[in-house]
Length: 518
Image (cartoon, rainbow, N blue to C red):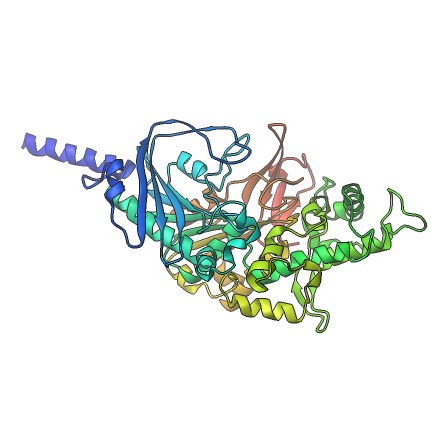
């Protein structure tokens, strides 16, 4: 009888230990993964990395960060004869949380998202995920380096474009789960996606085309309406360069921004340099137009018209239909990439190497009627991810948490609102999707991070509580940090709610705000 009791106690201890760190007797040593056979996959390295500093091979090199001990697996995926997708999987040697987190890319990708940065790890990175106990993976989407910024990799290589669009992420995810299962003896109990910009698009694409890949998705500032986003970027460049001096210099962007704040900052009840809801602001840059000679306190007529078009977005000159929404009021200080002497290379590369297949193509030649139709036909839904039917993803219990900075200077925040509304309308209204999909606008935040508003927050933590504990995020705490010190806290609210000041107490304290529909 005593022996039986001891055996039960031992068994219970084993079960408890497994739940904390589920590595079974079938688990494989790290180095043995080098010989793991997976379809269309060559594992090039499998090594046990001791706890210590990690230095990402970026230029300029970021500060090293301390990582826990882990098994580092490198592989090359070749789902087509012209595919060469490099990926890595990092597997905690101990204290694995039993979950998998894949992290996304930016722009045209071309690098694995290791993601260290000063002074802390990028929150959408393998480094950050590993430090939180996840098995994690990322890939370069099938091409390397600076070429990715120009999209030149796609010229004459349609399979590589397919890899970038969708296939690289899906193949990486499937192979990563197999590697996780081989190392630990069982696969992840839950799988998450975390990405912003292109990574946001990749997340939405996964929900639309591969609903079985992830149980929860964080999609920040998604570049999902790819074809029209590229047109929007070129439209802004054409608008500010149409007549000279049309380009708006940095000091005049500050002038424009200050005028917007003067007109609208107090509309939300708090004068803090941030528009809580930019859509409520009514402002015409013409009020800054020079009455005589150009000077530092006014805008030239071409600059006024350029600013109007940046706000207004890309419009078809024949039908007058909106092609892509413009930048929000309040975002002006971040317009330098939009308003520079050339449009963002991401957009110029798309038209040069994907649409027209002509490296000498000039952005000034884009026709916003016929060329947009050609762009859509060329893409044919390959990179663009705007399908609103997410029923398959939601039916599996999938949760989608999307966020977007209202001061985003690269991807219009209205794009996120438009996609959210399209899903709501397709599936029967906001009340029908709120258990599975929530959008959080981030006042004052620029593209994926930074800005004047409370721009530091943890969407992954909110997603985990939602998916695992069934606690839907009614708000997400956010912080603004200056010189390493938190100076403002504010709740982020699920769209269409915004943070509303209660009327008393410090306006820098989130506790004095509540989420309300304006």
